[in-house]
Image (cartoon, rainbow, N blue to C red; front, side, top):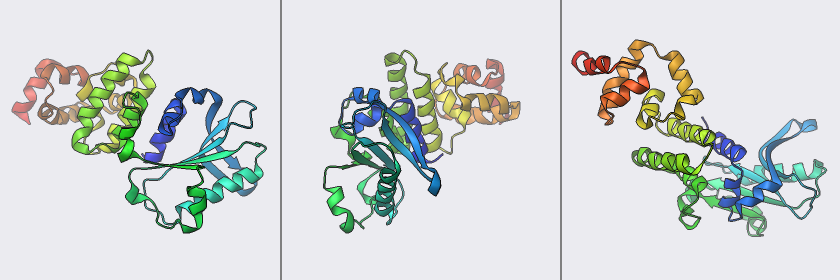
Length: 257
């Protein structure tokens, strides 16, 4: 899964997180809908746009781009998309641009011709490895930080995050599913089954990834996962519960594999 898809899913489900990122009140999300827009005559599409859902021209349109790859032509394309859309839309609102980078090293250095726009206050550039200055109590910001967490820290960070989600959300399922997606993206060497088992969360068992595992879950595949799950520190009982095996069957595995 591409990183930008994770962000767009996150903003679609929890638009308040976007406004926290740009240091605005999360309540601003009530004035917007997150969408993609298309200029049909040109078959032209912008994936990340916050469009005002109230008739107030003082509320700006936000164009959001997630850029995790080096692209020297990025700013030319970014501003071309914005101005082309503005020339075709019926909206009279002002606009703002937001670019999300993992770190400064990814950002294009071809900025001379766009310098006036970049320094005008219209464009906010966010570097995820510099988020320490943003609300440390925000669950949304903590979820975004998981995306760039080092692999050897991701599991511990995710465990803490999941416990917070379960405590602070009355309906945590969507955010838990997004956290699981991030982990699968970040830890490709771990099977989906192993990621599920690490947390033993009833909520995660309802996600599409866990359902896939259950459908694919032939006995041999489950048995092959047991030694690695034991190495991760799970108990025999936890492994049996998540893999739908008997405790006795799990206990047999180290002797036969």
